Length: 387
Image (tube, rainbow, N blue to C red; front, side):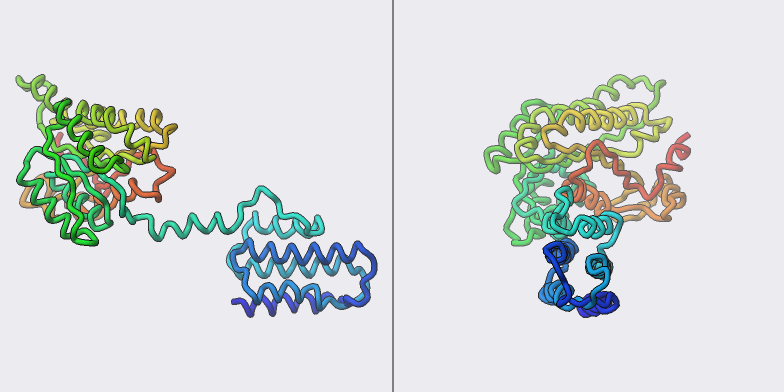
C-alpha cells in the first residue's frame, strides 16, 4: 500500500513536467514549502505517516520539473498526491477531500483548526477493543437468585468485574458467588453477597452501606424483578396483588436509585433496569404486571433526563421469550412463542447478559433513556397469545 502511494505521487509529479531549478521568487518558494507541509499534514491526518510517506512528501518538492505555469503545476501535482495518498489509506470522504483542496487553495500553510487530530480520533476506535473489560469496576446485580440475573452475573464475572449480588435466599447467593468466583479471570474474585429484601428501606440502606464500605464506588447497576402475577380487573384480590407487585418492583427500583445515585454520579456510571415487553405490549391477564413494567420504563426515561447532567446513564432492557436453556420447557405458552417468534427460537440468559454488558460499557456512552428489546421479535405477536 505504501509503495502504491509513492508511485502514484511520482506519476503526478512527472506528468506535471516541472523543473525546480527554474523556480524564481519567494512566492514560488513559499508555495512549495506550504505544499510540502500540507502533504505531511495530510498524510499524518490519514493516520498513515511513515518514513516512506515522508520521503514521498520531500520527493514531491525535490523532483519538480518544468517552467511554465510553475505555481499552478506545483500545487496541482501536490494536491493530486495528497488525494491519492488519502484515498489509498481509505480515508477520503467529503471532509478530507475539502481538507486537501483547502490546504492548497490557501498555499498550504495552516491545517484547519476545527478538524480533530488523527490521534484523538483513532484513540476512541482502539478503545473498543477493551470496552468490555470490567476489571476494577464495581457492578451491582439485584435479585441475583433469578435465572436471568445469574447469566448476567456470570458474564460480568468473566469480564473481571467486582460484583455485588443481592437476593433473599442466602444459600442460593452463596452458590452463585462460588460459581462467579470460579469464572473470574483470577478465580479468586468472589462477589460481595448481601442478603436483602428490596421492598424494605432498611435492607436497601444496608446494601448500599456495604457497597460503600467494601468498594467506595459503584460503576454499574443492573436491576431484575421476577414478580409475575396473572390477574385482571375482576379478580377479588386485585388490590392486594396490585400493591405487592408495584412495591416489589416499581417502588423498590425507585428507592434503590434514590440511595445509589450519589455513587453512580461519583463514578459517572450507568444503570440498566431489566423489564419485559409487557411494559410496551400489555396483555389482558397482566393488569398489575403490565402496568408496573410500563411505570418502570417511564421512570427510567425520567431518570435519564434528571441524571444525564450528572454523567449517569439510565436505560431499560425489555426481555421476552427467554428461558434458562432456550427450550420451551414443555410449557404450551412458551411453545407458541417459540413457533411464532420471527427468529424461530427462544432466547437464553446470555442474550440478556450481553445487552446488560453493552449498556454498562463505554460502547454505550452516548445512550441513555433507551429501551433495548431482547425478545427475538416476539413483541410483534406477543399480545394476541393471551386474549
